[in-house]
Length: 360
Ligand SMILES: Nc1ncnc2c1ncn2[C@@H]1O[C@H](COP(=O)(O)OP(=O)(O)OP(=O)(O)O)[C@@H](O)[C@H]1O
Ligand SMILES: [Mg+2]
Image 1: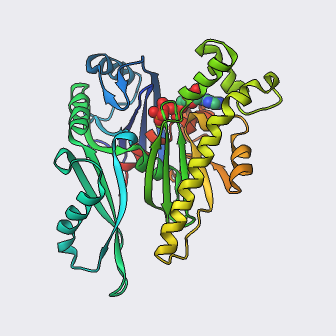
Image 2 (image 1 turned 60 degrees about the vertical axis):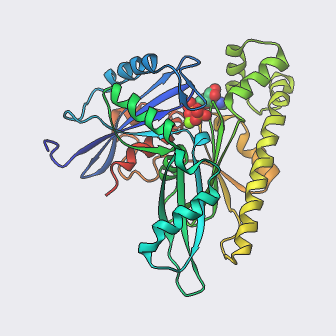
């Protein structure tokens, strides 16, 4: 009501070191980015995805909301992220059966696959692929998140004056932003952020596998600090200015970062081999990962794409979080025009969250 064919929505990407709001509008022309706000968070408010200091965080959220100029009429609906390291997502296979029997079967299978106590999680599932003949199977995407975490996010969002309409793992939001529905190339998506790295394997544009490891922008900073004997602020500055450029700073920053980036390479190799293995077991024709798609602030490290390409022999691309937002092109809104490509990339998760509420 009172939105005259326009629909506004908020996405909130919460992580240990920052929060990001994105406000999107869906209108006749497509989508407009109305606003986005980023606030750095003091250490300790959120730790490994768990909210530790609710009151302080609520004050920061309220401050950020005041910066969002256009308010939905009395509607503060928000889709908020859930930390990847605390959730569990897998594709499970089930034999041909009646769809009304699937719920129970998924429950049993999920119990076997989810490394968490089934009584202490919320879980959800959706069919990704239906069997096409008697010997074929269902592919079902199963997600689980600890109840205490989901409950604490809901409580905190409501106390901050927001209406949480969904909580969604970072991997799901990032995939919605970066992967075109028509894009069938098996892809590994790497979200390299301040507090960790999330991996998502997508096959036929559907999530197949997700994982989280502790390699992060913070670890990059620390490696530079220790190697060069400098403080964190200076280390972060060098990370951004030099990155993996061997020619700068006598190669010292490169040498400090190299072991961590090589660990990243090894992880990507393991995941691509895992996918290939699984696919050949299922005789799938699309069994080989064709490219790596990067997002997250630390994916902007100078020379990271060429380093990865050389070590992996795969196509490396930097993601475009506007790819599924027709109409949201530079010049379509003053806010979007004011952002550089690099800045837009750091809003990938928040954009994907906001888009969820605008899906038809
Ligand atoms: N040009 C750059 N080169 C390298 N790193 C950069 C650059 N710009 C920003 N960063 C780093 O990006 C990180 C912030 O990225 P991002 O906003 O994606 O993280 P986050 O979402 O808060 O963290 P996470 O998702 O891991 O919880 C910081 O570590 C920052 O130092
Ligand atoms: Mg992030």
